[in-house]
Length: 281
Ligand code: GUN
Image (cartoon, rainbow, N blue to C red; front, side):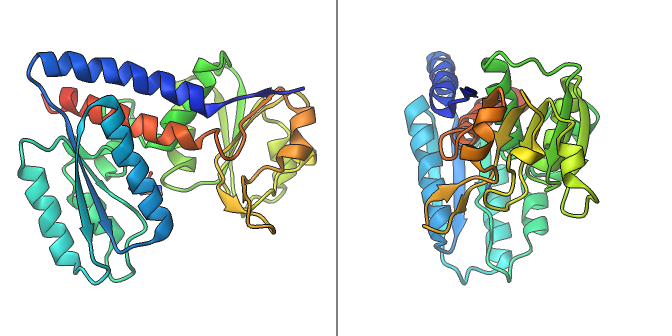
């Protein structure tokens, strides 16, 4: 029987630690505020954004909400970001992705002041991570490191295979696992023999976006399996990129979907919001 790595209590533990920090800052007269911008009304984005705002409320930091219509122009969005960059009472700026197709996401990300880039998507944040300097780290990969550490899973010296090379998950995940002294391989949709690679992994992190793709024949006996996927199966039920029922009996630990990696992303966003106070000092 594999250990089920439950993201709910671990994320709650982190949020409770942050709540204490926020209260201590408040006593020193320092308040923290996150600005959350959503353009259009993609239903999934609305759920994510509401959860982020609820998270702020839970730990006791402020949130400012900007719900802009779908037809907002790129220049209007950029000018709002520039205004928030200048505001002393705003510590973090988050623009929920995806954006409508007439808006250039890269331009938007680059316009956010790196000192307020709580998503860790700005090229300066990514570059700092790459060379081991302080800066904001993308929330999902940072959350996975916390999941592993707080579950007592050793990382140093382990073979880690990451399946997926996105800018938000796969690439920063590889850099973070390197920072933790794992031996890291990144496999992706164009890798010749994916199974041969994933079977080497002591720690397998899957972020490929294909429902239930990873069956037990991709997994070494006793591996730790982290599933970043959020998909809908044939019955419209939430499922990951890993076929949980098939893989669970052969691995030593596994994250469920939902309830594994998901809750950690918001906890790490809130962590970054608190960290913004130090970065802005
Ligand atoms: N869309 C999906 N995940 C994320 C995220 O972590 N941050 C933002 N800003 N948008 C997202």
